[in-house]
Amino acid sequence: MKARVYWSGVRERVIAVEEAERRARGLGPSRYPTFEPVLTLAEIAEVEAQFGVALPEEYRTFLAEVGAGGPGPALELTSLRRIDAKWAWIWDNDEDHPHLLDPSGPFVETEDWADQQMATLRASGYAPTTRDEDDDYLGDYRKVFGDVGEDAWFLERVRGAIPISDNGCGMTGWLIVVGPHRGELRDRDCAYNPPFEPYVDANGDRHTFRSWYIEWLEQRERAAR
Image 1 (cartoon, helix red, strand yellow):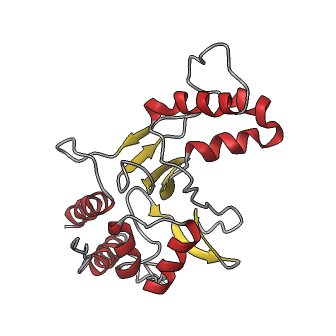
Image 2 (tube, one colour; image 1 turned 60 degrees about the vertical axis):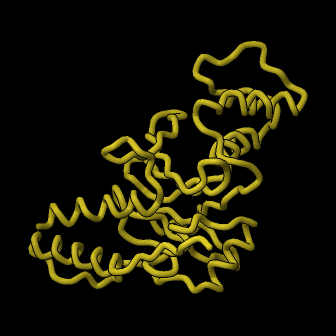
Image 3 (cartoon, helix red, strand yellow; image 1 turned 90 degrees about the horizontal axis):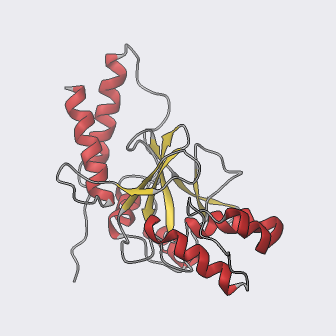
């Protein structure tokens, strides 16, 4: 049986470093909770049943032991909330624009994205005659799918992944939920159709949710000291 990932003491450590940073700036305690409430096992089961997937274990246990949103690498983690009886990930408290996981297929890595677009277009009876030099067939999606072409393009690009962090200025972090790299994270810049780049540690090894989060926390603790 696979050992469960525990987050013992992490919630308290994050709260402590947040308070230390506020004191260093001459501020008193915040009036707002550092983390959103943890989810119950029943609520996590609802999320997984809604999307038909098992969340990566490190993220699953974080939701149950630390919180469903709060401080995180760069700016903050996205929040997992129930809105109108459905669960979704929320950017910056913007519940009018929730993100719903598309579990219909694996997350497509950047180097494979052009081939995936070509396959989708050809399956719809349309074959681009030239390969886009930027590997971006958004215009072709608009031709094939009409008014919903741009949405279809975007949703297919992030299929199998969830937005896990708001990094500011349009930059985002993503957690892969479906596919061979399930549990890994990808960083995305704010440029037009930027690539999804793996988060790596000092040794060049790809981060999982826990190693990514703990590295960020340890860096903040060192800075606070």
